[in-house]
Length: 250
Image 1 (cartoon, rainbow, N blue to C red):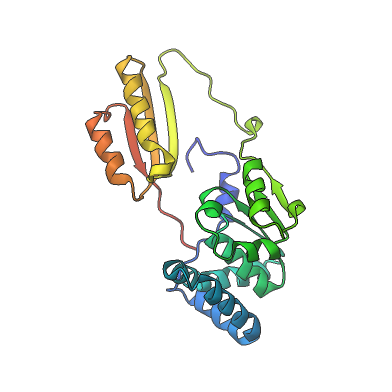
Image 2 (image 1 turned 45 degrees about the vertical axis):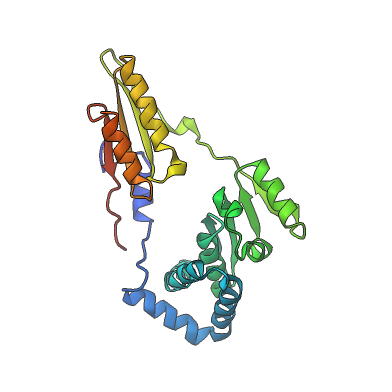
């Protein structure tokens, strides 16, 4: 860890697990374990996924692909005595949480953010019905969900706005000579708005404000446009692109 790490970073790193999709004995052991010990539940999960995803072959393939990993996570959390599963995003992550809850006879919840309820709703009603709670980030989202799925109890849907407890963070004292710093983290896709950020950086540069913008990025489908704009705006002296650090294998 670096000196700038947050106080809870070490604890988070030590308790975070990453699972491969297929090439792992741990994954296949879990898959075999559940198909042997809970064949009816496994058949129910597979049948539900096939029935609800048949009209979207690509999403069906993606969902089938995460089944082995979901089974491995289910076995791990059961061994750890965890009885509540939560997932962010109402699409494939929530489907994984639903599978884990089914396999372990436990409760699950998920957070719905944005595109995951407006652009994709495959199996969403089923997941909302079977979840203990559905959390979403805005009142607008809750209204949309309650209107789209009137048979779902509105009291099951809770609004939790995105935000940070700034009491946890103590900014460094500013001293003369320090330049203004901007940090942005995200995937290089259009909706993240990195092209807007780069144009803002060009505007700051044009009016002579000293600054450093660091963008920690994950590769995405808009990266060609972002890097082309970066070159065209001539921002190499004040904007840095930093690829995401490699993940620690479990």
